Image 1: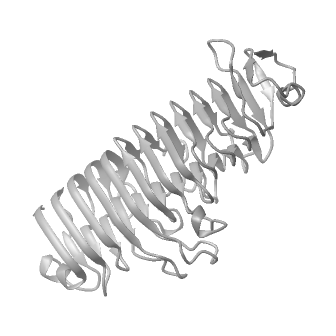
Image 2 (image 1 turned 90 degrees about the horizontal axis):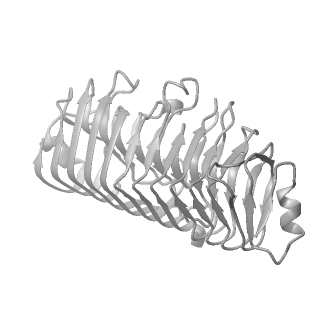
Image 3 (image 1 turned 60 degrees about the vertical axis):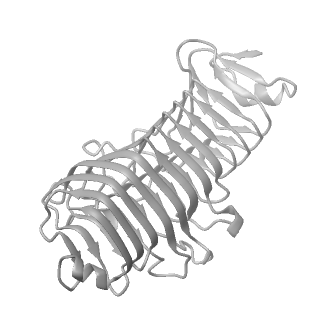
Amino acid sequence: MIIINPGQSIQSIIDNNPLESDFRLALGIFDGPLVLNRQLSIQSNTSTRPTIISHSTDTIKIIGPYVKLNFLEVRNDNQDGTIIHQFGPSPRLTYLNILGSEKGQHRGIHADGEGMLIDNCFVDDCWLIGRDPQALYGQDGTKNLYAVDSYFGGAAQSIMFGGGDPSNESNIPQNIIIQRCKLGKSLDKWSNAQIKCSLELKNCKNFQLIDSELIGAGISQGQGAYLMVFTPRNQGGNAPYSIVQNILIKNCVGSKAAGVANFLGTDDSKTSGPLRNLIIDGFKATEIDGVKFGARGFIFLFNKGPQNIILDNIDVQCENCAASGYFIPPIAVENLVMNNVGVSKTKYGWKVDGAGIGWNEVKKVCSGLSMYDVT
């Protein structure tokens, strides 16, 4: 074990002690950036978190395997940078405060590697004006990520996977579990920032959000203030295999939005794969208000034929909303199952774009519709 004191260079001490893997920081402020290219651990040597801060592209870049960061505060004064950027496999981030600058932050954690654990971390102040920031993001090789008991505060998206083309199809973000987490936004504090949704999946498969809370959505760049957005995107035009597939949202709650979920079957501007096999099982939404959050208030939006969607045990308390479900022809959705879905009264109820309201109209644009106890 080596103890590092403020004023000493963490990077130099790590580089000059290649056989040591346990580094402890005394209380104080330390300069980054750090490039961690081998197995090691960095943690506090006291009961208070020391701070690592940089003005760089990445404050901490993880390249080596099995890097452990425990009980630290990590910051980046470069608002266009990332705080922690993963490439190497199996890092362990535990009890970290990962905080953006006073002017905001592009990304808190950028996970482009395998096997990341995020446990009891607080990631916040990821907001910008005129640019999409995220607290947790991955696009190229994000696999087997597990986040638990953590907070993710991001303006455009609290959590997003996809949003840039992976290097190849095998590097689609996949096998991701977010459990007992809060996906939040400081809506009052970030009033001038680019606000979109709590969760967005653009290119991702085998994803689970369990026992978690989603807070806040907005209308930047034409968004409809949905808590969740599921839209396959061939973002750069080089990934026609982009897909959103095998998604489970279970036992979650949400608030402070104009709608719950936007389902887009395929990219509406480039070639992509489909959105298919998505289940929302147990979801309670409160403070859903079209007027307050600046959108028309479609609780669920279906467009371009997403496949095999199940909505089960859902309770939505809303005001000033246009439609419980809004369906865009010609085929809004394929194989939609709804069971025990309750939505407060909306202006039109269940409506088809450019047509009438009610289930007889909805059935015309749904290729397979099964429902029980839907209000």
